[in-house]
Length: 373
Image 1 (cartoon, rainbow, N blue to C red):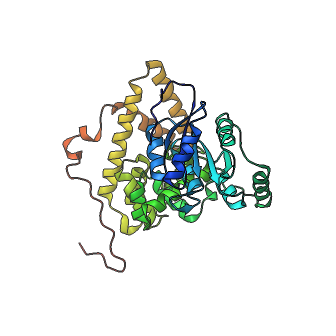
Image 2: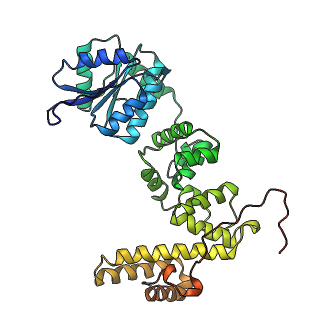
Image 3: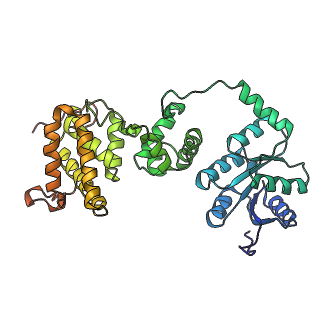
């Protein structure tokens, strides 16, 4: 049930979700007596909450710990909300101050814990405090939190990006995420349900401190390393990969991920004997070069002559430093690219045009002998 008060009024917009519809409506009606609050909607299921937050501005979400008849679903929903709408602050309603609900709520990012045995005016005060950036919790609840913090082992990321904080399965999900695969495609690849994949993604976001796929991709790249599913495939030896790596690179390449297209081209060129196909390797290299030249020309069109000269000079200097033995080849390559800046694969001479749709060869059945030519 969505309210339609004046959107310009000075109030805190709130969504309320209790364990049953009647409890939710009773709580919402009681909260409407506070002029500082606008109950935008009352919802009794996680689906309704997500739908409302997706279409209406919400400041604070008040959610019951038990939702959809599942204990702990409230904190899970809050984690989902935070991933999609980081500005929304969450308050979890609990029946008692037992340690587990309190810890689950704080781990999910709740800014307030409120007992359902508390008074309504205190709940309204809790909402105002949380909206102002404060934390609302009783002394007992804070004791649970501090006790858990003190007794937990020190966790330290084993690499610069912190990706070793993830479980092996979560690392698999990250590989497919940065490959550009949808939740449904990841579920099919890992033989999981889409709902399970979504839960994995929210846990990954929570562990790594990111809120969306782009931030995750940036995290895997910001230390100067390729995304995990490309690690080791952009440098020699090109055959140090497994079937899952080949399949994920192929899927990402078909989805237009340039890094994956380059990795796939290398595997088809210098990879394992069963994967090598020079024609397809050349096709993928052509596709990569075409996209890079097109992107470079788009950027170049926005620059002045002086800016272009500075950029090209810096590029030559970097290439000389990184590959001093191949300096002369680098100069030659730079000149050839300058001469082909208006050329793309689709504009090459007829003998180089890709006339057939790209089809990757099928992986042979294990144990089967390849057919002789």
